[in-house]
Length: 173
Image (cartoon, rainbow, N blue to C red):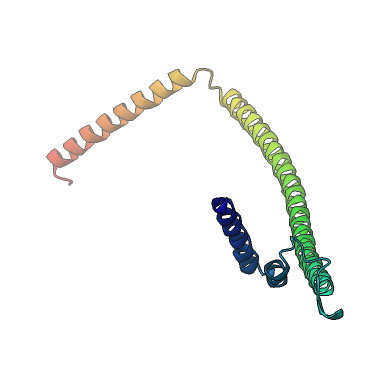
């Protein structure tokens, strides 16, 4: 039976130490003095004269704690709302940037299509002008004309070489 009391006393001591560590000093003192499990309705009196009423201290302390917790919660909510507002403004800025970029992309795409159309028109006109020139010059076969140009170049070179040789033999050069 004494082992049971020692065990209960040890558990009570551990709870009292835990109460002291968590800051419930008033509760720990009242538990130690009266053996009561709660300090909500405990008062200490001598010969019927109340000296301490722990219920008021506990209520006042818990009210102050609740007010502090509410203030902390309010601060956290204000910070959260500020963060949400910041994220919202950032998202709005990104949305505007996206819309601007889409507009610029559309403009560049239209400009590219216009430039390609102009290039195609110029290429078509150039090809038409070349064929018109070939028709006016009487060039029917480009390959044949190239061979004629090559052959005439070779003949001109041979003629100049022979002329130079003759002029050297005669002593004019």
